[in-house]
Image 1 (cartoon, rainbow, N blue to C red):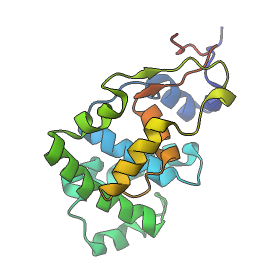
Image 2 (cartoon, one colour; image 1 turned 90 degrees about the horizontal axis):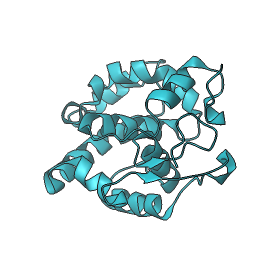
Image 3 (cartoon, rainbow, N blue to C red; image 1 turned 90 degrees about the vertical axis):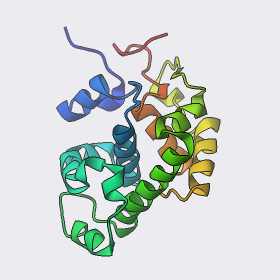
Image 4 (tube, one colour; image 1 turned 135 degrees about the vertical axis):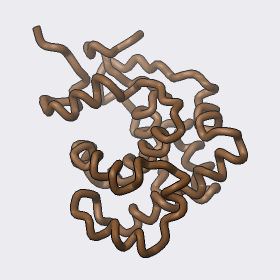
Length: 186
């Protein structure tokens, strides 16, 4: 008997594993929140599959997405990263990871944790959506628009409302598994 998943997971084992084990699962780990923010930014204009294929290289090249380390990268480090074909070699995206690490640390200082700041956008509880079809899942919401505005105000880059909503899905602030999927919970 085959497992029924959200249609976007397709038949690719990498996409299926991400769907089954991570997407929609609440994340409170600071490092993982930064990793997913960075990967969602890298994905802009590309497929998520492209990013998942490169995820291990990103983790390696960006020092396991430790914000304290990434925040200290200088322009020479950015230039070195841009020579690695295993990641997306877009200068603006690579630089955004560095500047976002710095902004991330400032939010941690202000709120005591980035987790506390981020989860306040959903009042500390995952939003369980009960969509019947993938076509019903929005690309952005009022929460993701508010998040994008506030993150941009704080100096974050590659954080538009659509990227923020995808980040909310990837870190379980929202659960958008659709009816028929084995992960659907309504």
